[in-house]
Image 1 (cartoon, rainbow, N blue to C red):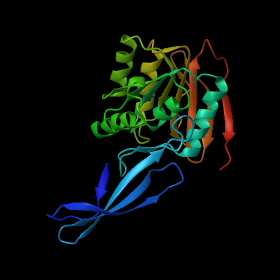
Image 2 (cartoon, one colour):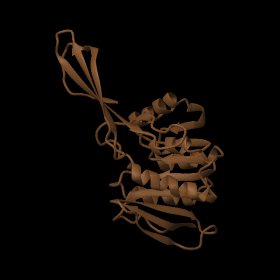
Image 3 (cartoon, helix red, strand yellow):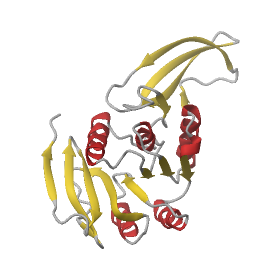
Length: 249
């Protein structure tokens, strides 16, 4: 996706120069490309991308939507998430389900770090198309599938297709607080979530998405900055809730 910073009936047809600006904080990095039209008018096009942090696609850029249509997970929180998953041994060769996937950064990071298969669920058509573009660019279309629909509809469809997730990550828009309870309740009732499946919800630090959903129980909370990760498992697999202190900035 891109934004055009100037408008004209004359199309910009020739690249003039390119500058790369790295946001450095997990937000979209940007490339400013200047074009020159036939009439001499210059145009700047702002292209946005994000980078893969680690694994086989480390430092590769992936596309993101400009503006506020999607909210990317910050690099430090993303690193915290994957360090926790790696410490459990759950990530390697796992089936990773990325709900409210945005442009797919979390699921792609999982594939980069050793997940075997990823399912991306995103109802926004533009974002879903960017996920497909990113998978194509990285050459991993065969390792992933995109469900362009609402998460609560996709979960039973995934289950009916025989998918059992090793890890489920959900990151609804922070303002849609009801989406957490709705999605977690659907997951708790679904065979998509097995006895050893790890469910991770990213949310605002000041918001509590809930501790119990059926037998799906939160057993750990990780806080960083203004965001937090609530981690759930079937109660038969975990019997205690553990709250972690804030991670240093």
